Length: 105
Length: 136
Image (cartoon, rainbow over all chains, first blue to last red; front, side, top):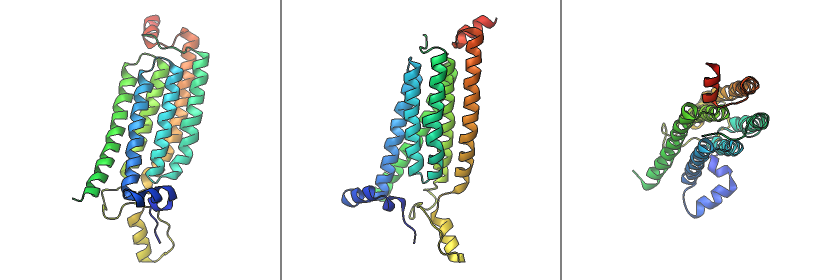
């Protein structure tokens, strides 16, 4: 009657039967995604080229989108992908093209 | 505690620690980076991290460790069916709040970007140190 999230995904359940339990694999993907988002945030904050910083922040938003899906909130995912990966970086790139690209020391 | 359960809790702790690290890094960016565009990027990352922490709390894995949250579909509308449905699903209240917060954050970010363009039209720079010097 109730199906677990890691049972509905065929790839995850196939890998999970072979090596490690499906729930642990679910949380493992979640932890790796969160760690990649930390690296992307650090690169976005310390980057001097603002165009690269916007691209890194879009990468971080993509990682958060995967995290929303794994936290069983697919409705948030459907709103978050167009807003945070598409619209905000696009308008920020327009702002950078109209103003200045490099951050001075 | 079983090794698998320990590993699950460890991975969940890594996730929430990474989110808190994101909050810390973006706060550093808001306060110490001088460029206006960089501040906008840091504010958007900060709001997204806060939203994700709310969703993570709504996942409520630690309330029932023997029965983790899952995708629940209510087909049996009797009393027992509703109780079971409420026991295995994730909390829907943070998801509703976060859905509203993302849309409001979009509007606020677009307004900040427009303010940045107006700043550039007035001062011909977006460096906040320069703007503070030119204002005085």
